[in-house]
Length: 385
Image 1 (tube, rainbow, N blue to C red):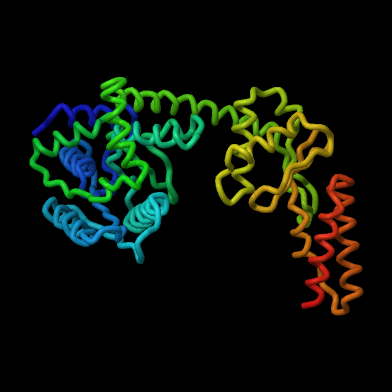
Image 2 (tube, helix red, strand yellow; image 1 turned 45 degrees about the vertical axis):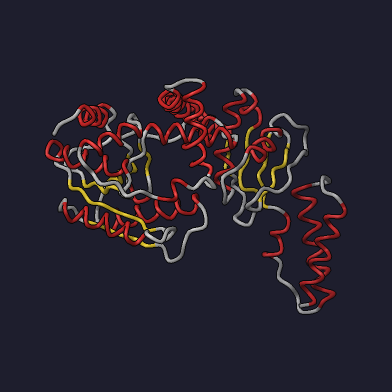
């Protein structure tokens, strides 16, 4: 049976160039209404597109019935004559974020091992609205508020695609009823200890009742508008970063990683400065930079000469040197390059001299005495070992 929802998703895939003909697609199926709706639609569209479909399910071991849930999805795949892939967590995952990261790692690994080009998920406009609200409450910028994107690249040139982002959860529920698709109810979706569940069950219904019945679709539309603006700003920021960034030609053992031309950055609007700085920090930090990290480095664009930041996570400090912002390895890393002598006195003198020379060369006079004393004390402990 061909429905208006089939036609809508078909148009979306074609107009947004989400998928190509004859691709190998791996569908992520939890057993809930969104993923069952997605599976049925993809199966019905398959003759038109010539796709090769597979189903993947992740057992997070969160619930007592998780194994039965996985078995249900496996039987569904068997009934539909679609290859099935299952991955079970070695132990229950502690948070939603950890579960999401593990899930996408699994999807990517299975897709790569079995030559699937795209991973298809059943995220809807409702998910998009919930994610926007969740990120807004957490204090995210435009990048977080754009919420879920239509597609994004994963590892190994595999694409993550979300073809249902214009479909609401009420629509997927009605679709499952019309096609008599048996939904596996996930009890964790009812647990109000999770912020997303409180948004889904309490905040969104309240907003719909008290403010706007169409708040769900309006928020999803806002996320769509922000996505286009974020893409433009990221491209402009990348161009700014490339103009401002100068890789150093100093020897490999130099402590300077790169230099940023302050005059180039000063000519740009603050929004682009922040984005360019974030891109730079992403190169040197192990975790995503937060607002405080970005603002510390942005402040150096107009700061006096010899100003510097506190160390960033990842072992880097930023120092103003005339028209440049220099990103340098923090002074503690010098311990990795000091060859400790066998005799305590010679080792201490040698290390102390190295530290003093390094301070003079890199930080000049802009470092406090207690930091020098701390370094000396640490060196003294090393030589005692």
